[in-house]
Amino acid sequence: PIPAPNVLPGVLSIVFMYIGYLVVKSIFY
Image 1: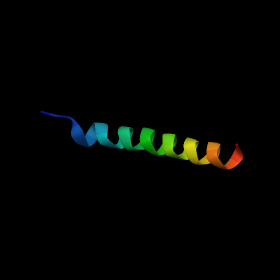
Image 2 (image 1 turned 30 degrees about the vertical axis):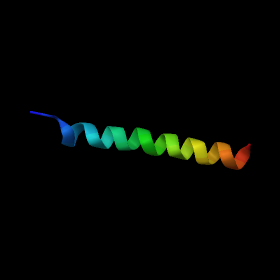
Image 3 (image 1 turned 135 degrees about the vertical axis):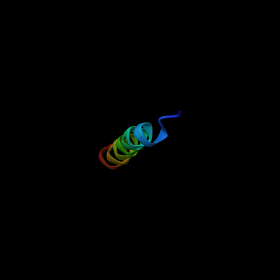
Image 4 (image 1 turned 60 degrees about the vertical axis):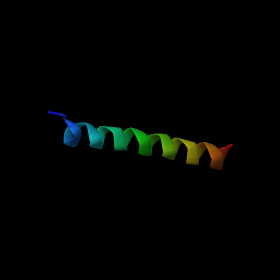
């Protein structure tokens, strides 16, 4: 079986951290 419910929160957290990093970079630089 595909462990989608277990993998999805980790992927979403990585995506949101990357988006937050881009937002902070665009604000401070």
